[in-house]
Structures are given as C-alpha cells and as structure tokens.
Image 1: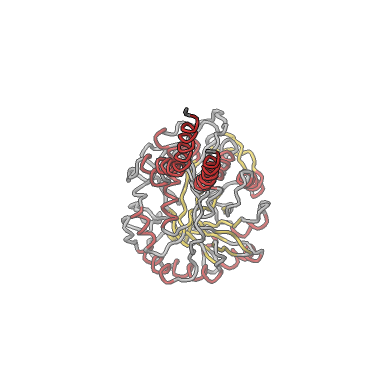
Image 2: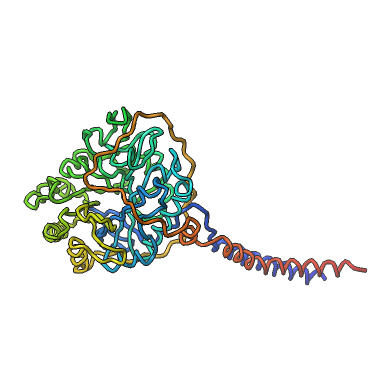
Length: 455
C-alpha cells in the first residue's frame, strides 16, 4: 500500500525530528570537569557586580587545608568540607570563601600522593566549589604552595615561596583556568604572598636565589597571560609584593589584562603589617582606589585573638567599597595565627565574634542567583612540566601560617566526584527514552513493507 507507506514515512520523519530535539536537550557530564555555576561575578568600573548587575563585594573567609593536607597524604581538607560545614559559614552571612591550592597536588607531579593529587584532587576541589556555590558563595582559588623543578611543594620546600615558579606555575594556571573558565562564580588569585623580590620581578619574573638554590620566578604578567590564553574571562586578583602588604605600589606595576577583569589583592594583618595601622589605611589604598581598581583584602586579621582592630578596619573597608576574606576558618589551637572558630559548627573565637557580628550587620552586598547554566567545561589537558633537580630544601620563614596537624579527609574521592556532578547513567537512560519512539516507528514501517512484499 504505497499511500500507507508514505504516511508512515511522514510519521517517522516527525518522530525523528522530535527525537533529535530531545537529544539536544540532554547534557552528558564529563568526568574531571567543573560545571558552570548560576553565580557570576565581574568587574564593572571600580566595583564588582553579580550576574544580574547588582553591586556585590566579596565578604568571607579563608578555608586553609587544601594547600597542605594532600602533600602530607592526609586527604584533601583539614577538618570537614561537607555541606554542613558550609552551612555554618552561611550562618555568618559569608558570600565568598578563599580556597588555597597546592601546585603539585593539582598537577599530580613531584611525588604528590596519587590518592590525593591529579584528577582526585581536582575533582575534590570542584566538588567543594560546587557546594560553596549551592550555598550562594563565590570561590576564590589561589596558588598557595609551590616549588620549582623536582622539589616537593610541601611544608619544607613548598610553603611561603618568594614567588610563583616558572617551571610549573604557568602550567598550573593554564590547567586551573581551563577547568573553571565556564564558572564565573570562581575568582583566580594568582599567587599568595610575593615577597623578597622587586616589583619588576613581581611583574616580569626574575632569577631568585634562596636556600633551595637559584631558580626562575614567573611574573604576574606571565601567570595572567596563562589564564587568558585559555579563553577564561574570570575575575583575577593579584596579591601585592611584600607578603601581599605593599598595596600603594600595586597600581604602578599592574599587568595588562585584555578583558579588564583584574583586582588588587591585599594582605593586611594587625599589628605587623605597616599599612594595617588605622592612621595609615587611607594613604595605603589611596593610589589604587583613585585609579578605579577594586581592592580585595584576600587575607586579613589581628593576632591578639580579640576584635579591637577589626571593629575599626571593617567599617572603614565598607566605607571604601573594599572586599575582604578573613584568615581563617580553621580550628587550630593557636588563636594568634589567627583563627575565627573553635569548632566547625561555627562557634567563634573572640576575634571571630567581631567578624561574625559585623557580617551579620551588613545587607545589600550579597549575590543573587542568575539564570541557571548547563554548560560543561572541557576536560583539563595534560601539561608537560620540567623536573630539573634543585638544591637542598629549607623551611620558608612564614609568620602568618602553620601546617595543620588534625582533620583527615571526610569525603572519599569517589564521593566527592558524585557530589560534584551527576552520574552518566541518567543521561544514558534519557537518550534511550528519546530514541524509543523513533525505533518503534521504524519497526512499524519494516513490518508493513514485509507484509506488502509477501505473496
């Protein structure tokens, strides 16, 4: 029956088109990638705005641990990294968390423990960032521990380096930027605390000599270019020279950014940081703010476990539109480090009380969720790294850090991956459901043709 066959073919075509449209709406997750977030932040003029164009500031804390636990073969986090611990942060009215990272663990090089490095480390960080986003928080990921050549980025040779190393740090930022480039709720902090180098070295790189020998440092321009070469347009912060503290000079050495999305990073601790003195604050930040550049105090705090200085600094920072993330949301016993909490349900130290109460008094700066995104970032490409041998290692003289000694990992690698993104099975089921009508229609046409061809 030719007419019936023509009608059947028309039905098949319509079903095929419908099935194809159904397939186009199915998003298949790719292992080892970071999904785009509904949070978004960018620089507009001299301030930050969210995905809906509302003025926001980064107001939150540092969450130390992910820079050292992996190299110590202890896990990913110092203490819990689950949703409950993030909910405690949210109860303080926090909207941003700075997550310190380890170069060797991210790249999986220089003897980093396999269980806690490479893809396992990247997926654990992605899972944590996803949980932060789910709680309405931005994530600031920074290069915190690093080492040149074949030296390990651990507590002996990776902590508190003068500057980023040319051997691995550009590759690290190419990888991190590729991983998170579709997630504009992630800010990149290029290097933790540059120190004992010139500002020209800060910008362009130079040869550094220290207890580990002579090695090549990568400048901020090289690191920023590594990020932008991936197509990532995320906001980038660049910590000042002088352990992050020499904020007035920042404006004289800012690198060129083709997308104009860079902010000045500032580390300000009382009483040891020169520009932390309340009488010097305006003079310190004046040149940067006058140039219309946002400032983020990516680390700040006071070392007396109290809140007297905070009660002066925080209202002043608010009045100048400065963002800040306090050091640190950890429970180390030595409060003079300083630490904000005594346990991970959010019980504050005396210093933490001042910070918590101030955040709770604020309104109008927190992000609103923009339109949900479904784009998936492409997998991180493998990078070639140098393994040049170095001289004898030494422990960097850090005044504002300690290596944590408690808190094993609370999320196994597979559990972290599961929390970070959906599994492949639902996508396969969806594909099968979408194709079922097309296959059924083809079967009907086949049977009709067999009947019409029978004697």
